[in-house]
Amino acid sequence: AAAAAAAVVVATAVAWRSAQSQLPRRVGVVLLDHGSLRAGSTLALRAVAEQLQARLGPDRALVRAASVRFSDKVPAVELGGQPALTLEPALRELAQAGAREVVVLPLFLGPGLTIKQVLPQQLATLRAQLSQEGLLDKLHVARFLGRDVAAGDQTLAAALAGRAQEVLAGAQLERPARVVLVDHGSPSALVGALRNKLAEQVAELLGTQAVAVQPASMERRPGAEYDFNEPLLERLLEVRPDWATGDVVVLLAFLLPGAHAGPGGDIVNILKKLRAQHPQLRTHLSEPLAHHPLVLDFLVAEVRRFYAI
Image 1 (cartoon, rainbow, N blue to C red):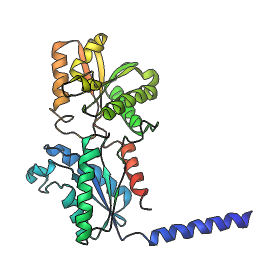
Image 2: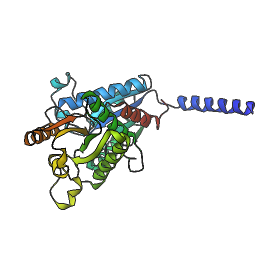
Image 3: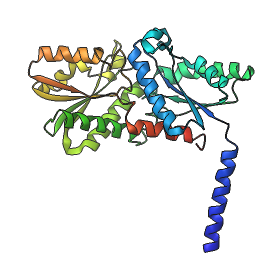
Image 4: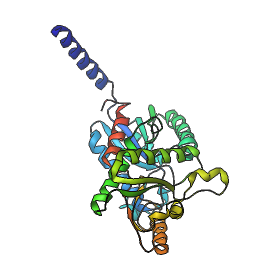
């Protein structure tokens, strides 16, 4: 038995060394978000990319922060003199640095239009173009964060519950608390279902710390076919009239602080209006999710699904 166990250890070590020997000199990693015209969003994305770089190690991986769109319009002076990258310049920059095997990490919560249509089209075009130019050998696309929520994965819910607990502790709020989980809102019913499932999971994880976790959307398109986005955050008190007095935790199902979830953004302004209409209402806003340790763990694990680094 001892000899058999030793043989397994030796075989495992040989397999690991073999996998290491087949690795490229450095794997390229693109941490890709939707993009924003606000500098704060790109700076926050870069901070996550730096954390990811530290976890993966500079000898084995080269990480770049990039956006699908918009961020390259932000003046470089607002970004420390370093212009924001979109996907193609990020891939070219990695190739110039010697990283021609790349993992794209979509920093997205759900399967919206960008994940389902825009990004696959961009990737197909760039894969063909850069391969033909000899700048790309392999291009892998990782899972978006919320892909397995419907199947029971609670990684995102645990991060959200953690953010709620930070607010409860920081503001010294009484338990059980009233919690509203708000996302952007989407024309995709799949994204709406994801938000609702996350609210259920967060309620389960918070247990007796929450009276309820109410899902809501920041905005929606007109038309009955988009009613799955209801209630809108601005109409929260129509469905929860008893929440008009006292404390409400507003849990951001957003990854980065842009025009919606950032300082002075849409969510802040909606809450300001609600408080003006209901002077006894007190709202307490969570931080976005991208910097939560569980999100970073997920991103590291996704890279390691493709490369043993």
